[in-house]
Image (tube, rainbow, N blue to C red):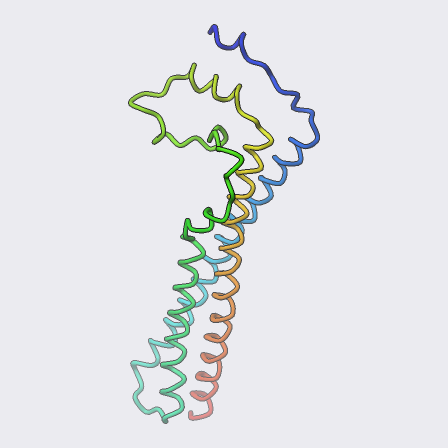
Length: 181
């Protein structure tokens, strides 16, 4: 391979590159953690709604406040699940907050195969890697991932708050059921 000889290897012992890579890895781990937590939260809310709806349909001997609590619990549970969906599938709009006036991403770290024409040439990719300013490229990826992380955090906190309200309403509903027995 003639292109390997042309490679100019960057000094990977550079502390700033190591710091940027560690930062990117930590941001990606946090993103994955929000996804897992959101999935668990959706499971808990779904189970609570399932128990509520199973009992809600069997017995029609409820007083007015129990009907209100049951309906409020179902509505808040569905809102919580919708927020979980926004955690798992965040909008791409936050990328617009990254100012790219002084840098054009090379997309050498996360390769988008849609940017290639009909075929991908290894030699042209190797040249692109050699020409990449890795500090700037990693900084761009960190900003992009941080934007995703912040959106996931926002929606997860909302889902958690609404889920807490759902579980509280469900608990009051069940206590009312026990008191009527």
